[in-house]
Amino acid sequence: MTWNDVVFLLPEIIISIGASLLLLAPVVGWRQRETSAKWSMLILLGITALTVIGCSYWVQEIPQSRSLAGMFALDGFAIFFKLIFITAIAMITLLSDDFLRESRYSVWEYYSLLGFALCGMMFMVSGMSLISIYIGLELMSLSSYILAGFFKNEEKSTEAAMKYFVLGAVSSGILLYGISLIYGVCGSLNLLDIGRALSTIITNDALMFGVMLLGAGLCFKMAAVPFHVWTPDVYEGAPTPITAFLSTASKAAAFSIFARIFYLALHDFQLDWSNVLATISALSMVLGNLAAITQDNVKRMLAYSSIAHAGYALLGIISLNSLGLRGVLIYSLVYVFANLGIWATVLMLRRHEYGGERVDDFEGLSRRAPFWAFAMVIFLLSLGGIPPTAGFIGKYFLFAAAIQAGFGWLAILAVLMSAVSMFYYLRLVVAMYLREGREADVAITRPLQIVAATCLIITLLLGIYPTPLINQATESSRWIGARAAIIPHAGR
Image (cartoon, rainbow, N blue to C red; front, side):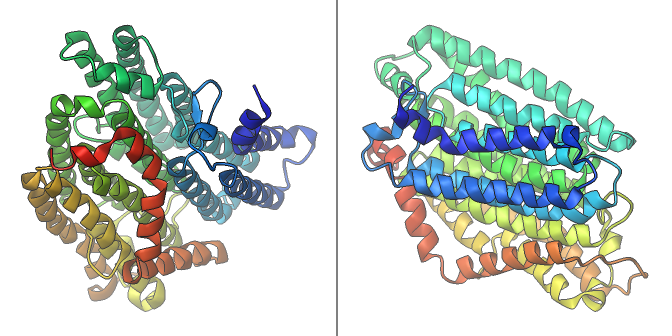
């Protein structure tokens, strides 16, 4: 290792040391200091974010942005997603505050696991080798399995963790086997070396099988059909803040590595895998939206909605053009903030150790909390891609990229499924505004207000004035776009 390696890895070093200290805090007698745990986590996230921003100034030339023998990259793409991850974890920390205070579990362990999950996501999005990406992915996944079953005395939480662990272990094995086949054919795990090797390979059955297994493992992580079966049960059984984590930061991490791997390593294999991913995208959008219509449980409804959104995000990956790559970045950001706002509102309708889970729980919310009911409407409209919300901008780039790449039929299907999604989103609006509703506890705490208000401002501001976000996404995707030479592929 060189000093440059240390500098580029500094954010990951800080968050891993901080998460370890959080885990050790109860041992030294700080178990009862729950407020200290929250502030320690927020301070740690703040230092990490400043370090990421500071490290970005060291990256001036492309060769300088790679370290650890080419296994790690600190490019604009990685920095963009790392800041999204840190922001999402900070908001989930706020969402968890009052939620954990009423529980009987160790908050130190909870925040430590979030820290390790963040470390895995940050290392994963900077990975330039399939093995480094896999290690980061497993660190995030193992932390997620434990967090899903964090309420170990709740049957639903334990069941969710077991299903998530078993299916996740199978998907990890599939992913690793696919990586081994790709390595056997290409002779390298480095994404750029794989890309160069593929440019000289006309056809290879082992390689095709390896790419299929790799894609299957990644589709599980982003909950795309037919690798989605874990999503509704895990979303319903996990603690609500952890459901928020799985549907935002974790899913954005899956989007990021999917884009990095397929744009950098497999772009010359596009004609072989694009039709398969197009089918997966179509099935995800159709099944996710149609299944969500029948759900009365809000967490399961949002789980199926997230499956549909995985299908939308795949549009940017299969298009393999500059619009698609920018669309993945933009859509990841707007999707994260819209979802976090929804989960903040769900947590306001608290019931035992879970948030408001039924559509009926939202009845009359416009009279009990009119401002937050309005905010919920904005978040739902953003997920549906309705202007002037940020979700419209994200979907515009993804749909335009698909049309430019020759997948017009898929873009039309995506538009139709977006219209279908408004049916079940509007069910919540009808419950909030047109139904009387019974008396229920509405816990509008300061942390929930901060998260919901921040998400509302960003969702509206980026919808009305998206230029800064578009410019930043363009700059952040520049390096990957140049290495993948995606401009000549546009419209292929």
